[in-house]
Amino acid sequence: MKFSYILDSSLILKYWNILPTVVLIWFVSKWLYFKLKYRNEILRNSEEVNVQSNYSNESFVYHPALEEKEHVPYRGATKILPGGALQFYQMMKDRRSVRDFKREPIPDQSVLENCIRAAGTSPSGAHTEPWTFCLISSADLKKSIRDIVESEEEINYSQRMHKQWTTDLRPLKTNHVKPYLTDAPYLILVFKQIYGMTKQGTRKQHYYNEISVSISVGILLCALQAAGLNSLVTTPLNCGPALRVLLNRPANEKLLVLLPVGYAAEACKIPDIQRKPLKDIFVRF
Ligand SMILES: Cc1cc2nc3c(=O)[nH]c(=O)nc-3n(C[C@H](O)[C@H](O)[C@H](O)COP(=O)(O)O)c2cc1C
Image (cartoon, rainbow, N blue to C red; front, side, top):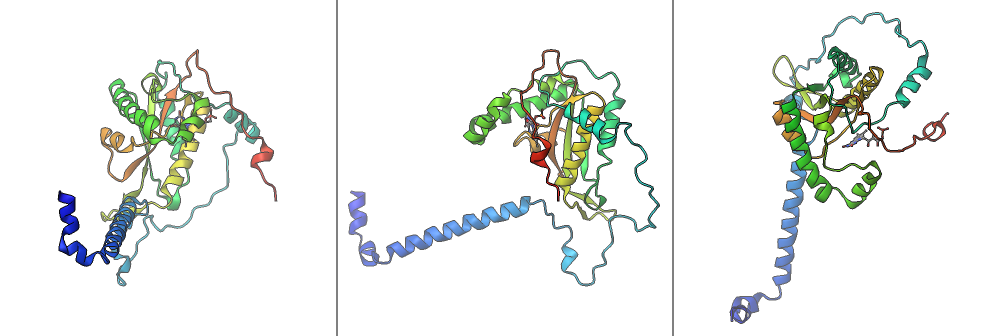
């Protein structure tokens, strides 16, 4: 009844020939609207933070974030491992990701402080040192972190991750259940600071912050290994904002990785994987 009424309506009959064009314009404008909205969203979340709106101001006086001082002499490396690079390689090839930890605390907590000190020696873009290492030992906090991670990971594994991704993870036997988040005596949450603040209270650009923090995490892994500790690099998808809020970290900090740290459990098992030989990772020119 309603349909025949529409068909019979004089307006539709009158303009039927331009109707496809109108519908096409409507679809194109809708598509353009969403494309622009999505682009703006990406720009807003972009790591390339536009530090000062003064860039376009010709009279703006630029100040370096670091103090301009005389350079100091440097005589090269002085603390060298007795066995050199070979010893270091042998130590590092012993490192494996551990997902089953002893519940006992680490006897000397200063060991972890020294590992984080070592991570803080990392090079960083324009010496911005864009990292924050949060060390968690509180059982309550670890439980809250586990709750957040497990609930997101349940959705990740069942909905967000592509079938190929979950299939690739099958040999590692990982899933959304993460007992290591409460078993390991420590969790280290590493945040990248996507920008900092100058003394004047303006935003300071943190160039290449993700690369800088990733290098510092590499050094942290080496230090933990040197201290005889085990760890696991994890990147829990979609958990960053909730964990940042839980730890009351500022908005310029984004979670990069979360590491449980401790000693491998007696019954700990790890995937039987091999590393690429030198010839496959090394090209000499
Ligand atoms: C960037 C990065 C992200 C990772 N994310 C996870 C993760 O979310 N969960 C996990 O169980 N392992 C994670 N891993 C650990 C890898 O699975 C592990 O390093 C790899 O299987 C090699 O094993 P190995 O560390 O014992 O040499 C991650 C490792 C890296 C470097």
